[in-house]
Image 1 (spheres, one colour):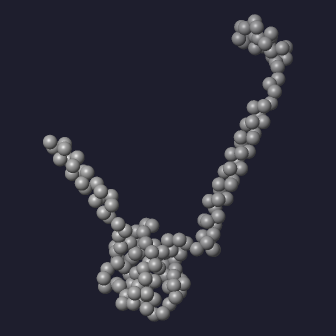
Image 2: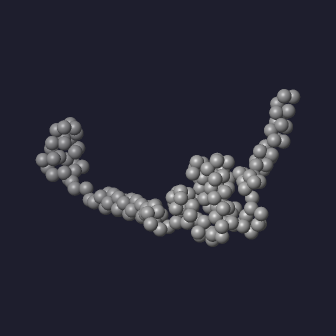
Image 3: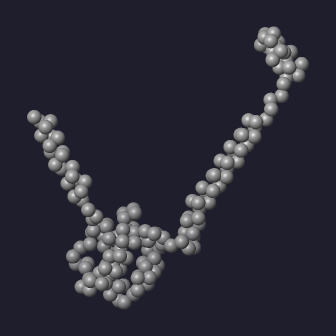
Length: 167
């Protein structure tokens, strides 16, 4: 009876645990802007900015105090009349390019964007060269032993048929 109750309990709670939790937004009511258009812009920008405390979490999702400060900063810049690009430039100037969840593909980060594909091409080239070298090495004809080598091998192995097989 206890096992049946346990199974029934798991069957009822599993869908709630799997389907219940949705995206978490740490936005607090006092942060909301009165203008819905500005708030939508702020939310969109917040989704692309990294919380400096929580790794790979946007400031829109993070409950950290610094994330709240960054959300307020974004909203202040929007209310001040900055465009989306100006807000992002301001945040990058203040916190560095690491604040962007999707960094730009310019400057020093360009090396990081290019390094992966370049390393893949190099690895493929090395692998193909290695396979080609092994294939060429494997196809080389094996030279037969000369009489002196065959006699020495026969002496070492004590096998009288070595000379017949080598010649």
